[in-house]
Amino acid sequence: MLSEIKQKINQRGWNVYEFSDDDTIYTAAPRGPATSLEIGKQYSLFPQVNDPTNVEQVQSGCRYVSQGGRYATIAHKGMPIVLVIVAVHPAEIVTRGAIENHLSYQDFSRALETLTSVIDIN
Image (cartoon, rainbow, N blue to C red; front, top):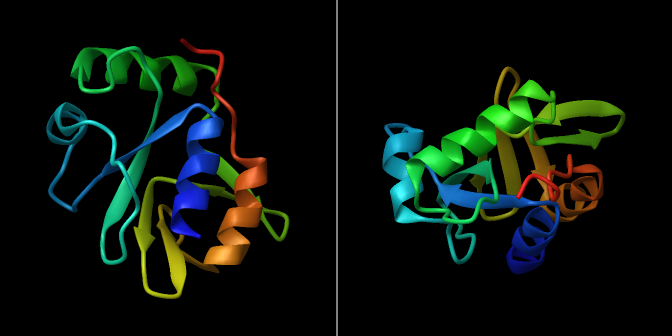
């Protein structure tokens, strides 16, 4: 299920970066996108760019999507959820932002059908 979730995110034009509480775009981007999602880790979504390890390109992609108001957002039960941090737990995904949301893998995967697409920024 986690590989399906990552694939859905990538198909909408986003990369998933491992992102600890101490990370910034300056420390996460040079490591490049995560190759898989793992239980016990948390991630942040940045728009796909030509060189996903280049901080300036990732920042530029982030500026571009934010200027257009196209943040990484899903809808769950009619409620918009901005995906600031996505933490993978054994039976659920916890999204962290203004409000913390707990979604089963299945509910999160379903909600990804509504993920803001930024496929056209490259």
